[in-house]
Length: 471
Ligand code: SF4
Ligand code: SF4
Image 1 (tube, protein in one colour):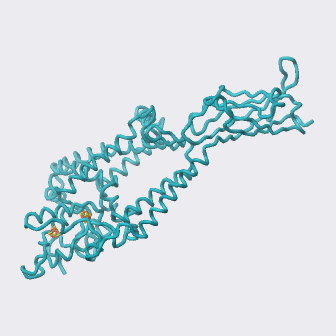
Image 2: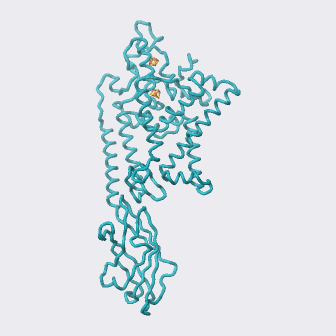
Image 3: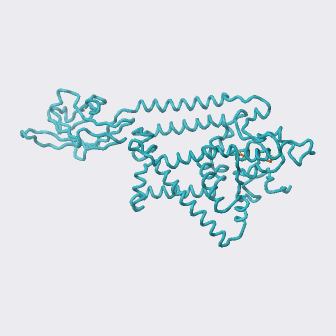
């Protein structure tokens, strides 16, 4: 059967594809209302957080940074050195179960209220598009029109501004991982000096430009893994944007006037939908819970003197006349798993704050030399890799643990004390010792690690194997 108008969707296919499966570009209309006002304020707050936070310094460090090269995580002046992959895994998996928990309670609230894709497209890209190309009707007319100087100039203006903004987003995104100073340094020098980072910024900016400027709802519908998963995360008690069928049906045109419901079949809810769906067909995978249809329908209800809420936040249970259970076994399980992973994160963190030492012997295992008194001494040299985790920096000294050996072995480090301000520090270490300490050409020596910042308290220990000629 042929559709009545372009907003009467064919139930057999997506709103964003035509009969041949080609993309149908959407031109959602602007909307005003209660939820739009609240989302706008919240979105600008998030944009501030996303784009400005990594550029702010607190206690001389970026307010948030996960430095992938030095494995340092900095957050609001707190620095965690030596972030292990297991810690990152626990953070990611905790966040995933937290989102699953929120989805079981509030449906796709992340998509509508927190996802950077929705936030940037709604607040920046769509606004620029409307400013340059006009209302939804004008944008569609421009898109359908043949190429002309007018169309070309509008498109150049739009894509030029989109490109500048995408470059800023791309730079900021990389700033989360390398820190703003490194980024600024990179930006002020030739790309060949930091080609890897330059390439990362360009690729990311290109992806943002493609997605926020053109791909848009297609990402939510066909590419986003969370979108695919939401149906298994929600149940009949989850709060979703829903149409009250009992109140709205039969909609205008499907029954005599005196029997019809509150829906006047105006398609206002479809016209404002960024994914082009008709919410009157029930909860659909394409719905990103943006609340546009709630505001659009409330405006119509005001005009026809009916109460708000024909489309509203509701649950399937509530729409069927039952009470919504806010916490179901499913949501409690998600919460418990999330808390378990958060607990594991802190457990791993507390277990892994020790210093660790890896000694890499120099190419010559040992060298024979003489001291000032002409006595034979042996020299061993190592490249030592010292890793540490946790928030603290260290200033360490080494001390031979066995008092009987202490005056026969001299430890030489490039600095006294050795400063550990990064997750991993490499230093050259020399050991000068009396050949008499060796047993069959080698000896394992235990050393205490003294923390100068704590009055040379022993905070750890380490062992090294010294070698010399076999006797
Ligand atoms: S159906 Fe409503 S809430 Fe869902 S995406 Fe469309 S406009 Fe947004
Ligand atoms: S906006 Fe409201 S009244 Fe208009 S079609 Fe949608 S549900 Fe019906």
